[in-house]
Image 1 (cartoon, rainbow, N blue to C red):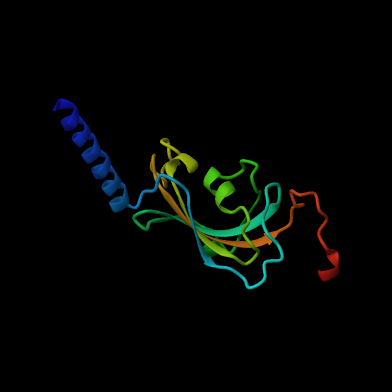
Image 2: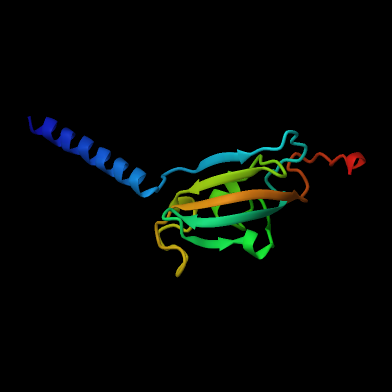
Length: 150
């Protein structure tokens, strides 16, 4: 009988923990929502590409902690090289130029338990509205881009 009680308590604990995470808006895995995708996707972002991305970063309570949209200056970095948080390196792969995605990034793929004070507390789930502006890096497949359509 004790085993059944312990199992019941454990199950209840898991349920309460899950409900609490959903209530606060926290996520445990990367969530990618495509908000807009161009009709034709001629250029996609691949590992190793230099990409320029507009973004608005928010906490789960809606507090905006950074936004390139307001500055009018998208960030440029090499995708998949660790220059940005892991949630971005994973969440932007395969994105088309002009595409807009909402990324919900768990702390383990963001700034972890330490956060990025003072704007981002430790353990924070991050929400990014992103738009891929350009892809300038060479494709990871080694294929040469078709310059005839430029």
